[in-house]
Image (cartoon, rainbow, N blue to C red):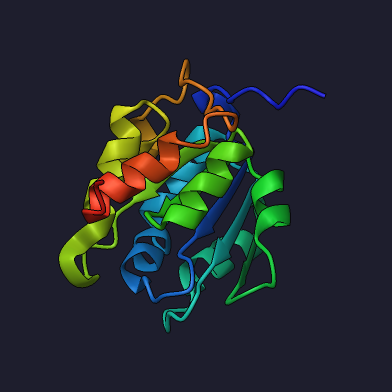
Length: 182
C-alpha cells in the first residue's frame, strides 16, 4: 500500500511528542501549560502522547486538563518504551527533539514533523540538523521559545515526502552537519 499523505494543519487529531533518550524538560514545560492546551483545541487535537525520556518534569497541567469534564482530548505520558514506532504511527503530527533517529523515523512514516532543538546540548548540533532538514522542506524546526507559535501557526501542507529510496540524502546531511565530510 502507498504511504499515507501528510495531513492538513487542521487535522492534527493525534500528536506524539518525543524527546529521545535524553532529558528535555524545557520542551515538556512548554507543553505543560494552559496556552498549549488552548492551542491543541485550536488545532483539533483529540489525543496527546508524550515521551519524557530522562526528564524530571511531570506534565501535571496536561493531566488535569485532560481529566476535566469536556476536555476534548485524551492524554498519556511515559518515560521510555522499547520502541516508539507504534506511538509514531498513531500520530498525525510528531513533535520531536532534533535527534537523527527520531527525525528519520518520522520522515519514513510520512508524518508531519515539527522539530524542536534542544539548545542545552553540547555544541548544539541539533540546530544544524534541524535547519538542514527544514531547508530541504521535510519538516519545520523551532526552538523551545518559539514552539507554541510554531505549533499554532505553521502549515504542513505541500511538504515533500522523504524518499526512502535515496539512502544517501539523510546520511549526507548528517555527515555534513557533524563535520564528517569526505
